[in-house]
Length: 147
Image 1 (cartoon, helix red, strand yellow):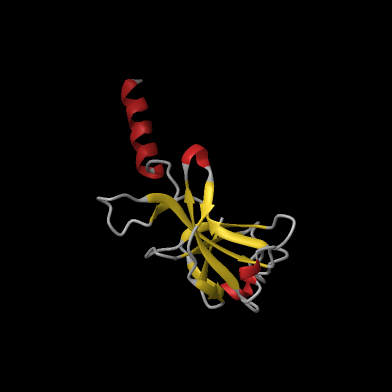
Image 2 (cartoon, rainbow, N blue to C red):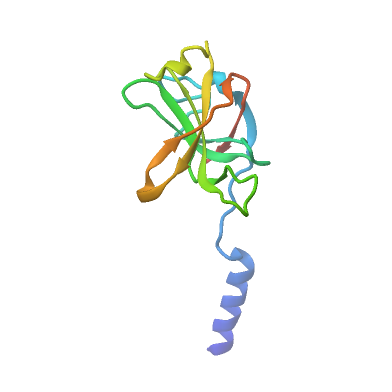
């Protein structure tokens, strides 16, 4: 019985591997300007089927979340990464990027058809603060991958 159990375990381990699944690959799917600020959706790529990602200050896309709260849309990275870290010896912050459009912020009004960029940082007691901006974006590449 023991040999049979070991054999079944070996076949299972070889057949299934570790059980970990690998995410689908990212594919370029649209420019940021194609993301609808009312529905937070890229035409033909519903967020129920597709995950969106943006490579901003990163070599590969990071997952983003598009939210619309009362007015406008905000697209930002889901998990923080190091920002303001040009000299790690003097400090760095957890944060990321956000692109927004049609909000109550006056600075996105000048981005006709585009999204305003800002950095965000995570501070004490998980308070989020917005920081400097690199201006308006329409051509920022958005990536998609199937859920």
